[in-house]
Amino acid sequence: MQSLTATESRPDALADVPGICDLPLTRAVVQYRDVHELHHPGGRIRDIGLAVVMAGRFASSARAVDLGSAEVKYLNLTTELVILDWVYDPTLAHLRALSDAREQPSRGEQLRRYCFDLALRVLDRRGFTPLTRPILLRIGFRDLCKDLDLHEDTVVRIVTAPGVITRVHLDYEANCLVFRTPGRGGAHGLGKVLREAFGGLPVGTSGPAGGDPCEIHHVRFGVPVTFQEVLGSLRVMRRGLSRLVARFEPERFGTVSGLTSTFGERATLARLNAGDGRFGIASPELGDPAMSVH
Image 1 (cartoon, rainbow, N blue to C red):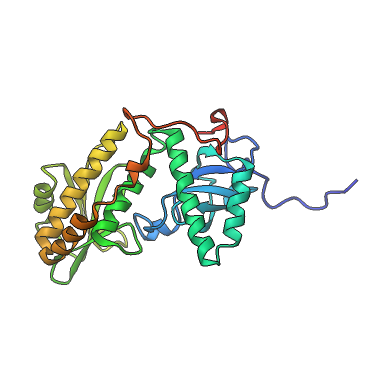
Image 2 (image 1 turned 90 degrees about the vertical axis):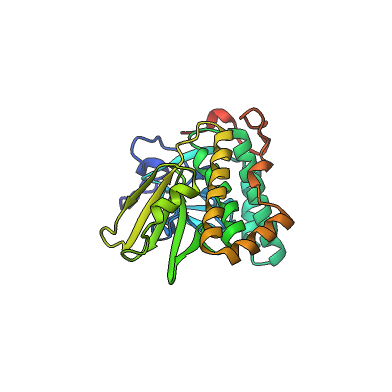
């Protein structure tokens, strides 16, 4: 018999999550917020905030792969845990094999395609719910950012005055556009412009506070309760942000509108099997719906 000479520094599985049973997280499909997003609101353009846990012995340091970027992350899931689904062991084994070989360019691209296809299958299976809504909004807003201002963050940058760049990100939980303008007075008159661009939607403001030097404006769209309302909100966002770019940067708007006229607007959410506001049939690669933990 092996004697226990020391107490483990951390409990196994989900024992470090208050109120949760002893359940390993490996194979779970989780919604997460990256620590990166605390300093870069909106997150990275390649991530979608949905990941498969590849090694989940400890919820405080779960190894997971984001299903948008296919990049491995170490997540702390002890404070906020949303499990949308589970994958079967063969799916997890395939993800691990692709991830281990991702240094090869062809395998890296194969992993990204496989991960995003898996994300769409999870969303198809779960449909529109309060839990999937932030992910759907993030994917849709990511398309908008790629069309208007493709760079490393899920943010649209607009030069609203000489030397002043306003950064716009989406609060995925509240469905609210957040406009951050650096310095005092840099956002003078922006509230009126936002009301005109977004058809009179409520616009809130807050001045610099704490260590944040930015003036902040919020455009609130209301929380969508159906998938069609998600799409409607995204259309209004695209139209309003396009108007702002046209107003403040007409030359850039001409270039962007030319590209979207030629190649079309990105519409990733159109790949979902949505019908009458509901999504399609479960994929056989995913676990039993009854096993989902919310």
